[in-house]
Length: 446
Image (cartoon, rainbow, N blue to C red; front, side, top):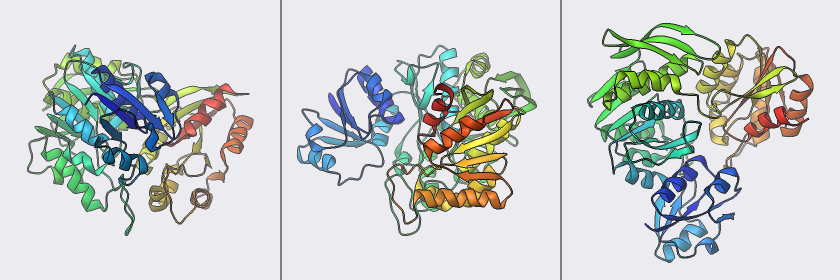
């Protein structure tokens, strides 16, 4: 593999792989429907859109999960004899080359991977890191190193079951990324049973599996495997938790012995669970306790994970990637510690997920004092229900629960949030789509 063309190179995972390939001396080109800052930062030729004429003298075509196998650019690559790889196939190959840690799960995998990166850096291990987000301790979303390999492994891709690592971490597992009956998509599992089977394959292929003692599904899937459990009922847990608006502290206890006080600079009980997962994975990997505690304290948070963007009219503007009801609920619980009126700009992500979980979104968002629901960010999906109708359904569901809610499109939502922001408010931008741009415009424009 000497010359690689990367489709979807603006994506956080694809740009990270491109960066790591370049560090190994591979020539990289790319294309994307909407090239942006990540693609530009790579400093490589990037084409807009997807077309067969992008292919020059490359020997490999690298695909993101959603690209169908009959795409014209893919067909042209095969006709020319190029090696065609899915991103998860390449990641599996890269992780197999050295001692490695892979982190997956419905929620928390990016933060847990970031915490582990901080720990491995503190331990002086010169890690190679691939992350599904931006981390200030790294040069963006990836780091090339000669030491152990650490990667976020996306469970939405059925191919993740073929990834082999020394330590496999599963933060949790819920019924997400599952296609409705009769529908199929490359980045969805056919059923909950198929998702469970894929997770079982990932855990079974590892030297040791690190899973939560409080997740019955993961405990069942790892029952007869070499595993280590974190959380209450496991071998590593937290005691004396002191939550705060911007972080927390607790005693890290291993098999009844206090290892020391852990201090986090990220808020929320969910981040305590993420820290326990990272700490136990590091212990399983042979990292010293001192480096674990220092690494957890050093972790500044991943971009778009309860990230304060700035202020408008005295209101705090916080951006968060939460795009599943469980994540929304956890983020709103963390926001509650700030003592501000919680007002949400919520952008549902993916049509099929929103269609399946809209009632759960209503229940999770009901913790807020006000919710502005934006049209669904489709991520290229199509469904029988329109993005606008699904979002309006969520807004109406919230109104029925007594929550101040309205459906607005982007510019209207931006104008409304700016005009009504007050010093007691927290405007929380939630979603995995481009709602993050609204958060930044809210702070920096007008």
